[in-house]
Each structure stands twice: as structure tokens, then as C-alpha cells.
Length: 556
Image (cartoon, rainbow, N blue to C red):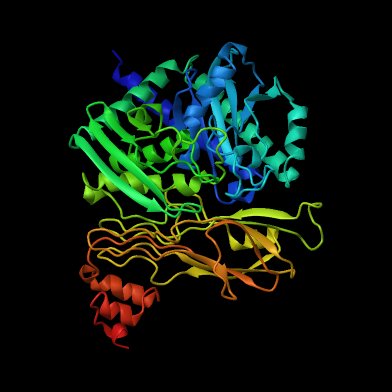
């Protein structure tokens, strides 16, 4: 039986472990070359026990990376047995089905040793690399081999010696060789820092093994989630959501079952896989599904193998949420990030007081590419993902968040960074008034973005947007959020997905979607309407007609 003192020690070590992986993530973010990592935090970091169970994840990072990486380490152990690992080793893959869902994410796993030289844990991390060759980071490919360099499970570093052949291949298969090489080394470096900090922690607490701590973390977390699930009614609930797809709408259908053993979500009834790169490997489907469940059911419980283990997911092979190799999957986030909203549709039938309305959900990344005037960076020009976001769904007692990435958590790219690394000029970037769905609580607003070339040359956008034909739905009388839009200032409406070009003297205009509202608009508190008027996010006419507001500004 564990004593009170031992429990306190275990809890302190657990907290220290979380601090260790957060330092690991910060090292990755501060040494990365790609702005989407350095500025926006599109990464994950974590520590795993010898069985491949995730014990702690960094606060910095995205659910899609973290929760899919949670399974990835087990694949590394299967390919590289623990007894073969040595100090100074590091392993790499970007296999979408054994990594985090598409080729642009490199996953690096590093064994960690105690001061006696015994293997005690593994550190793993992943980040998004902007260009890994192929057709580019867009949805137009028709198989994974068109999407870029495919790295199987390989040893990147052998007892401190870098695999220079592999690094040469990586450099030769990207339009951004300096950034891509630098990002690869930043991933390896952050794992090294984590391993050193873990050894220091173990020396401080005079322990040679993490096994007792691992069992404590997994057991306590599992018990905590099961206690929350026990408060829910038993049964099965269903929900469907239609999204734009590439060339035809896609239905995402979920059946959620709460039982004595946990919560299971099955996606039978979901549309078949697409010919284009909006398909999702099952690991990424699982990652965002369990994140959505955790946000509602167990939001205060740390994310690890114990808390995740009672939340399970299945999807028929060959559907868009379980697309097998060699399906194209480059833009898997456009579909996969919709899944929290899908499971929320089930959960709001159980606990409506905890569940928001639908939001934009998928990132509205402006994936741009083109020439530079001076040929800076060699003959490669520029390639960048400028992250931007729409509005989240209204919450039961609060408005949705404007221009905020949920569920990904990725921050928007600062305009100053985008303009310094590309020849593009942002002529407008502001909140989009009245784009949040009206309701007692209002959906978050999207953005208005206008971009042109600063060097009078055409440039390309690899569009990967959604919620254009099927906006976020309101609920309980709340209105839908505004649909997204992408086009040229000259008036041409562009496609929401696929490679397209922007002429040198025109400008790209992007309107990101708004989140859905909750409750009848007439029930909205007058002080909230007055604030919206003061912020110029609602017009006087809309305040009067929709909200019944009769304050001074509405009468103007």
C-alpha cells in the first residue's frame, strides 16, 4: 500500500514531468526555422514509458499532433526494440499512418537513459514542416506519393552520428532546404533537452526507474476519467454533420456510446474516402475525437495514456476518416478538425449545458507560394502557411471566441512575420462584423483578410478551406455562423480547395467563417448588444430587428 508521503512524492514528480516536457516544447518552438512552428506553436512534445505509454504532454502543442503521437511511439518501439537503443540514438518518420497523419509532420523519438546508462523512457516530438516536396502542401494530389518525401521508420542519429545520407535526401526533396534541415535538427535537439532534464530529475529524487510513477499516472488518470463518465447516463446517441469536401459534400456520422467501460465513438455511415488529399488516417481521427470528448467530459484531467485509454474510436476502413495507404492525406486537418463538433452533437443530447455550438473548427491556413523578386533563398522562391482562423461556436453562457483556432490551438501568423518572409502585403486584416451567429450567446466572429503582391508578380494559393457551402450551425434557436468566402478583389469567386493563382495586380480576399449561436437572439442581454454596437460588430439595424435592442446607438 502506498503511503501518504509516497503519494505526495509521486504527485511532485508528476508535476515535474509536465514541466520537463513543457521545456522540451519550448526548445522546439524557439529553435525551429518554420514560422508555423516558431510563431504559431504547430508542434507537440511528450514523454513515454518503456511500454510506449504517454505519461505527460507539453501544454504547448496541438491535439492532433499530441494524441496521434501518443500511438506513434509504440510503432517506433516495434521497429526498434528497446534492447537495441543506445545513448545518442534518435529515430524519425513522417509516415502518415504511423506518425501524425500527413507527410509534412516529422516525428522524432529519442531514448532517455538514467545516470547509470539504463533506458528509462522515450521522448517524442513532432512539428509541421512547410515543404517536403511533391505537389506541395495542398489537397490536389491523388495519392500519398504525389504529396512529398515519404520517410519510413529510420534511424536519424546513431550514437551521436547523424545519418548524413538521410539528411541529404531530405534537403534534396524540398523547396526550402535550409528551413527543412533546421527544423529536423530542432526536433532532435528538444528531445535531447528533455532527456537531460529527466535524468536530472531522477537523480534529484534518487530513483532509477519511472515504472512506479508511470503506473501512478496512468491509474490515477484513468480512475479520474471513469469517475466523470460514471456521472453520465448510459446509452447511445447519434449525430451527423455535412462539410464541403473537395468536389462533393462529405457526411461525418458519429454514434457515441457511454458504457461502464468508457466512451466509444463509431463513424459508421461516414462518407467514403475522397480521391483528393482531404482524407484522414485513423490515428488523426482518434486524436481529435478523444480531444473533443475530453473537453466536455474530463476537461480538468491531464492528457496521458490513462485518461485517453477509456475513450475509444472506430471507423470503417475506406471511409474518409479511416483512409488506408496510399490515400492522399496532406490536408487531413480540414476534415479531422471537424470531429470535436461532430461528437459535441452527440454530447449535447446528454449534457447540453457543457457543449458549445458548431464553430469554424478547421484552420483557414493561407498556404501561399511564389517567386521572390531578387531570387532570395536561391531559386526556390517562397512557400509559407499563414495561419488564420474563424470564430468558435457560442458557449452555453458565453459568446464564442473570435478569430480563434479551436480545436487546433494554433496561433495566427503575425502579419509582420508573413510580410518579412514573403513579398506579400496585407492590405486588410480585421474582425468580420456580424459573422458570428446571432443568439442568446453569439458565435465568435471571423476575419476579413486582403492580400496582394508587393513585387507585381503572380503568386499561388493552395486553397484548403471549408465551411463555405456548409457554415457552422447554431442550436436551440441560435442562428448559423456566416459562411466563409475566398475570391479576388476584382470579383472572381475562387474555389475553396485546390491550387489557384492570384494575378500580380489583383488581391486575394478571404472572409473566414463565424461560429453558430445558441438560443433565440431576442433573449440576448441588452448590455451585450450595446457592447457589440460599441465595437462595431453589429449594425444598429441588426440590433433593433434581430435583438430588439432600443438603446441610444440602435436608434441612430
